[in-house]
Structure formats: C-alpha cells, structure tokens
Length: 426
Image (tube, rainbow, N blue to C red; front, side, top):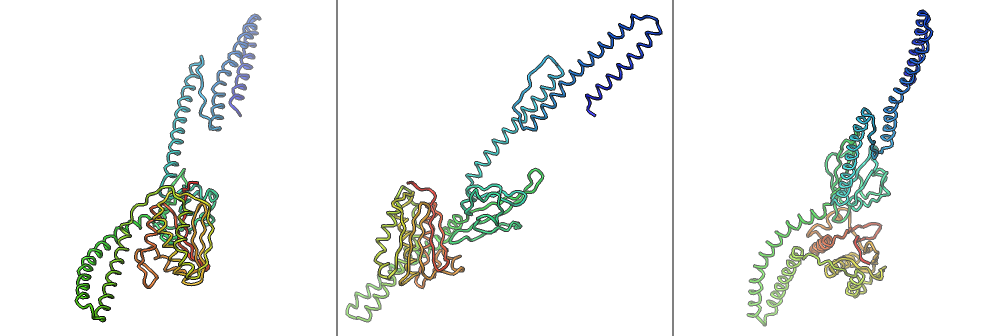
C-alpha cells in the first residue's frame, strides 16, 4: 500500500476516534455547546492534515519528476527557489548534483572526441571488438592496412573483408607477410569496460621500419665494398692499359687485356648501381600527370616490346595528376616493364590499366613461387642468372618515399604489380 493511502487512513481513524470520544465526553458534562467546539476542532484538524499532506506532496512530486529526468538522461533542468526553505535545500542539492553530472558528461564527451581524433590520426591501425568479438569500430589506418570499410562494422574478423586472418587467442605479437614487401604486425590486448572483457586489436605496418633498417645495414656494406673495389680498380686499369700499350701488335695479349679491362669496367658499373640504392635522393613531390609519365616510358620501351613479339594492352585515363617526382616514377615504371619483358621473353602479353586509384602492370610471364615471393623485395636477392637484385629495392624505396601503396602478386598465370595512390588532383 502506498504511503499516501496509509496517511489518509490514519487521519480518518484518528479523527473518527477523536469525534466519538469527544461526543461522549460532552454528553457526560451536560454542556451541549461544547459539541460545536468539538466540531470546529475536528474541521480545523482535518484542514491542517490536508495542508500538511499537500506540503508533503511537493517533495514527492519533486522526486517523481527528477526520477523521470534521470531516466530520460536530461541534465539541463535547474529548479528555482521558492518560499519553502526545506524544499529549497532539496532543490540546491539536486541542482548541484545535476551541474556536476553535466560537467562530467561534457568532460567525458570532449575526452571521447579527443581520443577519436587521436585514433583517426594514429599511424597504428586500431580495431575495437565487442563482447561477441564483432567489430565495433575501425580507425582509418586499420581500414587502409586491411582493406576494410564501415560496412565491416558489426561483422566478425573472419566474416569481414580483412586481407589477413587473425588468431584472437594469440598472446604475443604476430608478423604477417601480405604480399610483396609489405609486412603487418598485429597484437591483441584485453581490457575491462563496465565490468566486461573486451578486445583491442592493433596493427602496425612494418614496411618503412624494415626498409630503413635494411638501408642502414646494406649502406655500410656498400660503402665498404665500393671503397675497396674502387681503390683496386684504378691501379689495375692503369697497369692493364700500360701493358696493352707495350704490346700493341700482340693480338693474344691485346684480347686478354681488353677482356680484363672490360670486366673491371663492368665491376665499376656494378658498384655504382649498388651505390645508387643508398644515394637515391628524396623525391620532389609536385603535381605531375601520371598518364604523360606512362606514355613517355611506353615510347621508350616500345622497340624492345615489339622486338620480343609481346602484345601490349593499355587502358589509360585522359589525364590524372599526382603529387610525385616524375623522374623517379619513370625509373620505377621502366624497371617494372623491364621485369615483365624479361619474365615473358618471347610472345606474351602485358596489360597496363590506369584508374583514379591505382596503376596495374600485369604480364603472363613465368611468374614466381611462394618461396620467392617472400624474398622479392629483399636487397640483392634475384632470380635472374645475371641479376643484381637492386631493381625491386629501388622501386620499393621510390614508392615508399611517395607514400604510395604497392603489391606484387602472381596468380592464375599472371603477375600483377599494383601501385595504389590515395591523394589525386583532378
């Protein structure tokens, strides 16, 4: 039973007993006029009881209304002061509580916005999973690394379009090769939120780190080799030329010395090519037309393509401007096409497709195995008998310097070199 009904019942009982008792007491005194006094007293008492009830009802209504505001998550209401001091104290407590909650909520919202901005700008990919290990949020870096989009939110990682598979039970960091030179490292951490365990997945792109570490390592080796070889080639060439001049009419000696001089020159060129990997300058990124760049390279390589009997298919846009260094990009395209031509050797096909988002160069040459794929972008690794293993290394350094994504894959008899660019200027 509600308190107001208990209060009403109690008032009725009290006044009923008071009326009967007073009436009998008045009859025993033989003073009839006192009955009017008793009736007046009872009426006044009832009036006071009702008045007190209305006063009690104010806090009750206040509590009811405040409860409704809290349920509706509305903390913008402030109660004004009245002539009731006790009620004013209650109002002051409620207003102070609401103001503090509003400040806390505002601080929490600002903090959430700040954390969201930090995550969006983070160079590390972050995926938040809910209690059912479904994707709850993805930051832009994670989308870029894994090929995800907002459409994957609400799906499990296995159901999503992620380009790699994750082991959610893993406790240590894992490194995954996703093709070409790109390697991703991911780790899974658990935390508690509102009493429930959640998972946080972080993804790091190791490509730049590995590239810089490799550069530091092989640059020292190249400088040392170049120093020793150059110090030797100069005197050797001088001696060989002197001997050749001493025996101008001896064909056998001249043939041997000519061959030796040619080999020393080849060795010098070999070391210069290695040194170019270290000395590659930073790209000068300005607005350049990639279509014009591709056309220039094709004109240069056309005689070789025709000589090999290779069929060339192109799908190019009319114009597309990118922030790039045209000289370095030409070097990249020449190396890619050269690799395709050598992989085909005779009578194959090369396809070049340029869109607003990517440039794809494909060939139906001999391709490469899965074992070779893991090593393709390693410095000085080559599958060619006379290769030096620096072509893909230079390509990698140039594209990373431009901030372009790239991959080299072989499937269904075709090898695809994909260059992806996000920032274009129409």
